[in-house]
Length: 135
Ligand SMILES: [Fe+2]
Ligand SMILES: [Fe+2]
Image (cartoon, rainbow, N blue to C red; front, side, top):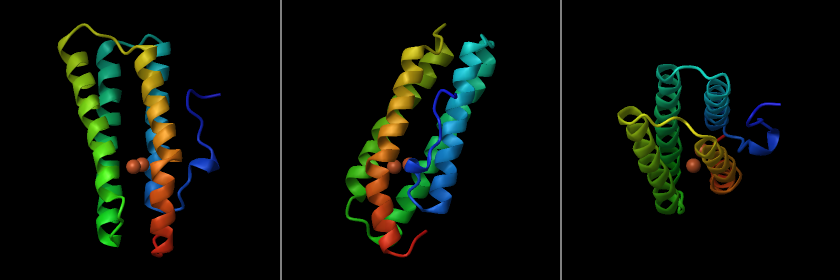
């Protein structure tokens, strides 16, 4: 069993978005594995950077679709994305500058954020996108 298991319930039935969500789950699993295996800091840092970059790219994909379809939940959804992004950048800086390690608390936070957001706001947005013929 992986740290975060992909299941069909996470799908929003928009192919590009589902693919990115799966990619984010994979990256979080890789980061977790790296911590469990005690890999060195530079490896963990590389995976963390990849996870954050891919998250930013993913948020941009969703927000572009919301704007193109006139999704009324855009502002609120974008704010939630922006808040996570700024938290992630803080974590990244802390990790780069200090001797901080990636804690299980941080991994749990990311796991919780990703599952809650994907099952919550992303599903609502997915229903709207599907109703506009985006799949
Ligand atoms: Fe998402
Ligand atoms: Fe989202």
